[in-house]
Length: 294
Image (cartoon, rainbow, N blue to C red; front, side, top):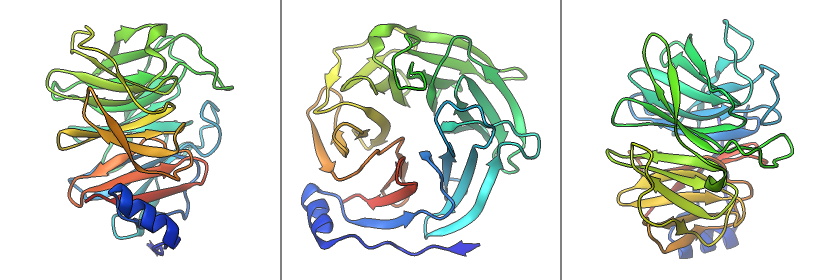
């Protein structure tokens, strides 16, 4: 195990954060991380799982990996799951979700499943036509929901914008919940008992659909776009924005306000419900910042 140092912020940044309603970072992880795209909090093990693309988001290089971290600043397993080892195929891991002891990870056009305890592969499903699978959310209905942000290697639209539903079992099966170029690049997902929420990377929108794929209500407009991560904090949502270099906080329908700025390339955020911490992967900086919420 390797101990990491808590990285102190500049006074000006700390003052800004406090004024915005979020304390300065409690911990900054950097050792061993390479293009971190997503952070998932596992409440059962009380650890953080970081998806490391380790290169370009669409490179089929089989060198992606997941790192397991302790909330106190310790690297527990530098490469808990690693492409190219132990029969693991993992190119560019992005969003992930836990369901019934299985870890599901989005990887370009394939949803991959791994044993949460051992990291051993437990199956996969290739989603036909998908070009940029991005986030994964486990629903109360026992199904997985996966977003396709519809991008190519130059981050140009491909027109495959969709949210997919994957049903676990001996063989994973996938079908489209909603699919349209008008979805503007679905990214971060949140699934409740009766709805699927997602934010758009290609616009500044929060959408809501029911579990049958029907649109519910009006689209919520956020202050800026390039939206990525989406997590629930009580009855509010936290959303990361590449366009604003910030985190927004608010309720569906709006308004959303910026609660933290100066965040270059904030990707798929997680939420530590035990400590009320938002977990922010800094895609370009190869770090994960842990912020305490008031």
